[in-house]
Amino acid sequence: MIIKIPIKFTDRNIDKIISDIYSEYSKNPDEYFTFDLTEVEFIGNQELLIFSGLLKSFVDAGTEFEILFFKKGLPTSKINDRVKKQIIQFWQVWEIYKVIKTDDYFKYFGIDGNSVERLQSELNYYPKLSELYSRHGVTPFTCLDYIKNYSEQEVQLLIDPIYNLNMVIEELLQVNNCHHPFTSNLLSTIITEEFYLNFLDHAQQSAFSRFKLAAFMSISFRSKIDENKVEAAKIQTRLEHNFETEQIEESKNFFFDETLKKYKNNSYIEFSFLDFGIGIPNSLKNEYSTSYDDNNKIVDDSEILKFAFKHDSSRHPIYDDKRFTKNIPRGLFDALTIVRRYKGLLIARSNYGKVICDFSFTNEMDKAFTTFGDSSLFFPGTLVSIYIPAFEGNFKVNESTIKPEIIFEKIRPSHRQYLNINSIASNLNSGKSKLYFTLLKELRAKITQSKERSLVFISFKASEWIESRIIKKSLYLLLTGNTNKFDPLSPISN
Image (cartoon, rainbow, N blue to C red; front, side):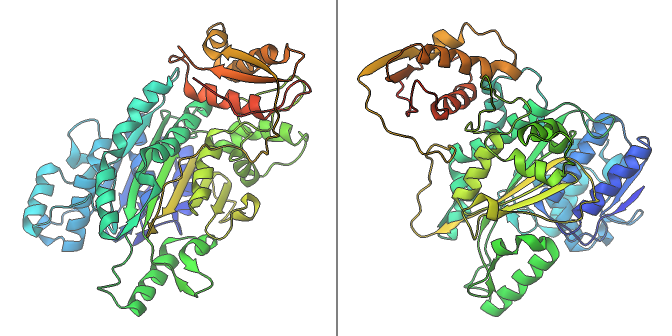
């Protein structure tokens, strides 16, 4: 199969291309794929991630393919400068060669490292600030393997090195006299960790028959056009062209100022997370139907995808004895809250579901959500892309606790109770699917055993071995779940 990549490979055309590739692979996993990039002038951040993720998965699955950066038989001396520069960026910045297990680069790419070095010498071009197209601070292609019995500490060690390029982004921000919340390791780690943990919790098998379970991610910084060097009218012309050729129509509010009637010349971070699993609609279909008490309802993939970002959705739900608990924050909800906090944009695809959540014009979840695209085109797995704008002037990163929108009642009890979460959790013997529920049940039992209205102090001493994610989610559930015997209070820990 020959896949002709268009001049601009972007949000505007990704759905048809990936759906066609999946359809052909499903018919014949032994198909030979040729990716023709000979006319490509631009590839978006998420599209480059999808492309590279496919190549890596093809290699692991034994599927044969080749990449045409230029026409076969054309000597490198005849390649035009634009294509040369593009090849150098793919190789040196994106490190696309890492998808190949051996050093047989000519077989797959028609070039190798020596070829790229010659191109660099001819052009005298050595990418600075991790430049790729109009993006900077680009993280090289990053694959996050599936870990069956993971620990939170292990996950943290895997994702920490990804943010070494933050210094590059910070330098660009200073040049542009602006700030960005993603330079806070806390917020960037929360987003990456929650997406990765969500993948690890829900991964079952790949949508592609021979693919290994894996996730992929990328981060880049897109600078605003320099208003001191380019005329305002030309800036608007360029921004309008970029939107019409790169972005989906439903995202226009993020890129266009409806009040001023002009396109926004803003810098922003692009973050994408991808996996080729069975997809969120498949993994959450039963939970969605149960939550809405209608197992016979025809379920729309986009509705399930929207449901996945609620704070009470999970394939491993936490149950109270007689009801679902509605106030526990989940991983995707945490990430979405950060997007809302900084007026960002989130675009998600999974199976036939396609949703967009744009907080650039509203702070209300329901108003921010909408669907987009052709619902007949299938995306094999899940792709989530986040755009968070940079801010000019005085700016302070909000690193406050992420929690559901619950109003806590205030009480002044005279009776106090002290609990150590380590002593409770160390006696648990539950699998991950019931771990939250078991910890919750034990906490409830100890708190509600008193007939007095109590102020409960919870200590975390000697609990380093317990994953903070488990503690955080169970406590949120406990502290927002009203019962007849106690009122919710913020925890006091030592």
